[in-house]
View: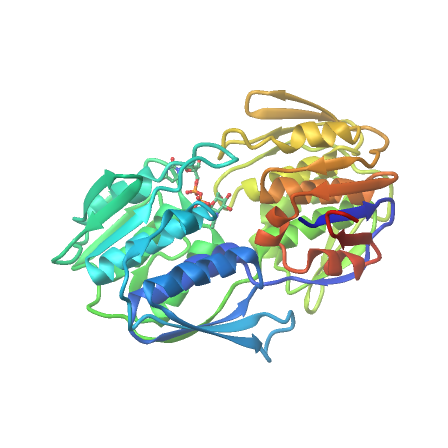
Length: 430
Ligand code: UD1
């Protein structure tokens, strides 16, 4: 298995292209199941999770054609054509679902268009129990019969789904996405209350509208969908990855460098921008994105609490903690979305960080420097937080379990090396 070796201490200088969002691309790909016409997605990132979703859709019978780089894309995103006219299998098997929880996003579209689906329960995951009850309850409200047996969610609606009022007891990105897709083909009106407003949810809704869905209230927590008989083909460009954007912004800030994030959108990470500025980081718009710099003086510790959008994203919590490890003073980082999402703490501590966890909060007391160490992480965002720490640390950091990074960061080493980082991928025995 590959490792990543970083020799820290070099400020990042240059520009980094921001890819299409993984978390938008996955539900968009699942949306292809709703039509027998071709859905063409552009600005698609090249990631392990995209391959897993492609494999899942292919085994359902979706015909996928991956074309080269999108000529209109400044960041080299690819174009994928998906045609689901020949669905011959409505089962999402354990082997694929266990690799990627987002596989559950095929449930809503399959039941809505084919009247049935069997999707493996995703099971536990490194960042908490992450149940799927909201997905199941939502589909039940639309009239699906759901039976949990032998580790699978068996859903059926032989006569189709029917619109309903659904109040989510908790904000869920995935459940909102599943319901948006299912309700698009249900009979009559569905109202989703306390819906997730994440930009990736908005991107999916925009694509569904392009496919002929009737959706109002996009980008708010009350979304109304008038079901239609069929959806047609469409072309859609995947929104920029705000988590990748925030990650590189933190890396630039942590190393005291100056980096332009090409294609990055500050408007999608306003809460993060506010936090970075409070910590002493300068942000300025450019013609093609925005620039992050920290030329003057040390960082100051700031308090951060994760919340559903437009709050501070949980997917940037670990990276923020890495940034705060060498800030002056203390910062309190509180995780409200997932339990057990502090697995990066002991690894950061091995690099010299001073962090104490009290329940859902971590108190980070800034230290003058981190030192490189061999580290490993158990999830995607925790892994990249260790990369940021490695870029700042004195000496060498070797990150194990690189496959986590490959799930969500396209060409990470190249993008960072292009800004002067001393970072390379090495084979396990090197
Ligand atoms: C998505 C993102 C993930 C991000 C998360 C929160 C994708 C592919 N993944 O995950 O990167 O960290 O949003 O922004 O887009 N919950 C329930 N029951 C459910 C569903 C969720 O209790 O049926 C809980 C979860 O355990 C969690 C909270 O709701 O505590 C939010 O989870 P959710 O928004 O659903 O996350 P995902 O869609 O899985």
